[in-house]
Image (cartoon, rainbow, N blue to C red; front, side):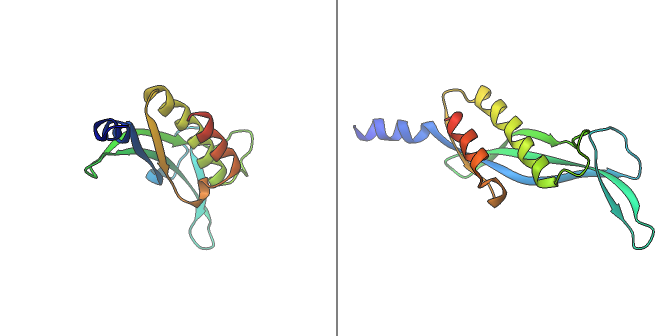
Length: 129
């Protein structure tokens, strides 16, 4: 493979960073059934409803990062006790499918934290190439 072909091949692989969940806003009332819920305040334990978003950014060769996609982390209506981590992983699976549709022929390297270092996530990454 020539030097030029190697450079072209290197450019075909991009890094997509899956950002840790980011809290966008919160309210004292449930504005949508998908809101996540927590209880705050010492003895009163007032319910607070909030929204987390999983972010995907594309890291270019010159370290410029471009926002690509946001996936809302949703509360599972059937299972209120589901962990926040479980909701984040489900958001990742939805995001991975959408990213593959957008970047069909591009190989992506995923940079994520330890939450995503599990069998089902690795299987999903292999499935989408």
